[in-house]
Length: 359
Ligand code: UD1
Image (cartoon, rainbow, N blue to C red):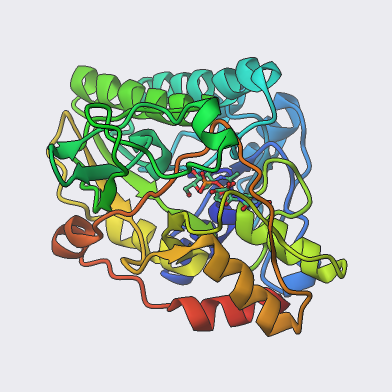
């Protein structure tokens, strides 16, 4: 079962699993809207109620495997989970959020939704979970101070941000820190509602694994982009926001000084990482995490330039604006995923952005 199968990443994961010969049960609160656009095989149902889900599950039609139901709906899960051997949990409310009014929704969909799913998996003795986690759980990445060595900076102060001091400073001497590559054993330090609920998902899944002997592969995605990325919502990732601006003939608005680093990883690589995670080396009762990243970070300014140049302008505008929930640099090591999952991103920044700018 792929939860979130109508979503951006979940859709690509479901496609990759199907292409590899797996029998995929898709579950999503929305039905897939890309069916006609892509020409892919889609048998979307638009049930919307447990009653409809039951009817379709009973019909036993192998092609009728996309179900519209909320991941928090235990009744729907009880209808759909029999026969499922593994759950790939991609359903989530994503993005940074607009303000604190989003807190209940993030908690409900991401934390409570995962709890309902895990309880249902236990009822149906399904022991294998792949969890879509995120690099946002690390908060500010890893830094070093020339005088004081490895350091974890506090959240950036409003005053520093207002004054254009975007790089975190050493809490001991106040000098700017140099970023370093983060590994999976780093202590989590979520800095916004989304990050907190992604970490809650990992904790809940680890609790479930310990109690049931289940196995969890947590994939900590970096900045995923690519075809079918959602656009024009305040919850969209920066690549989609920039592309939408360019499509509308507007200059991409680059926040801070544009030198903040991210690792942009293509959605088809992320789908391949999920395939690799099917045979992840996880012991029963354990959760193990992997960074899913390209290993080649770029600045947000580079991203804006690449998309603008591919579309023939307008040129990006560096605004100096900031968002309090944003972290400055987040750069991870893809080493563990390479060594243990055999996963390496294949789609490079230039080729990926070229395709994305026009998709
Ligand atoms: C993103 C995703 C998050 C996901 C994570 C890892 C969103 C909103 N965030 O986090 O869900 O878990 O990747 O996959 O989808 N920026 C601009 N101009 C804009 C918007 C943003 O310059 O118009 C800057 C931000 O200030 C930030 C950077 O771009 O420095 C990245 O922002 P964004 O893509 O929103 O979020 P991430 O924190 O990287």
